[in-house]
Image 1 (cartoon, one colour):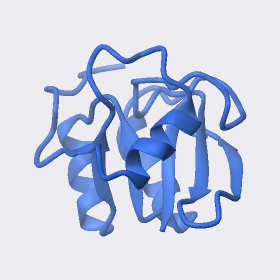
Image 2 (cartoon, one colour):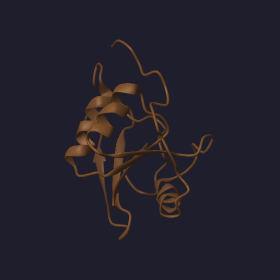
Image 3 (cartoon, helix red, strand yellow):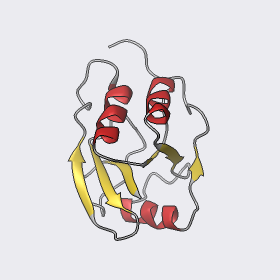
Image 4 (cartoon, one colour):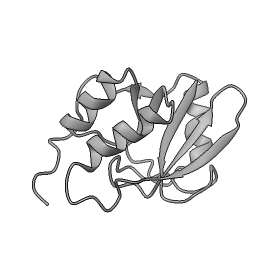
Length: 124
């Protein structure tokens, strides 16, 4: 499965970033082989709608699931409409690196986000 993880840095060893639409990078990793690539988030500097744009970008890259810290309502709806699973990193674990989240995904330890996990951001 192609798994996208929101990241602060551009490697699987970099720190996780709990923001979805405003994370600087996404690491797209094959959960079975461990092969990964880093994708700069094209929505990072968007004036608005960063979550939706990030969701559309990940769908276009073939992601099948996403791990982040929170999803706004529009981002969550876009991800689900595209058929992507939304998973939440454990709360209070901001110091995790991407590889640790990959390990938790493989172990089935990540909780699914069954709905948006925050109210989203409004305006600019």
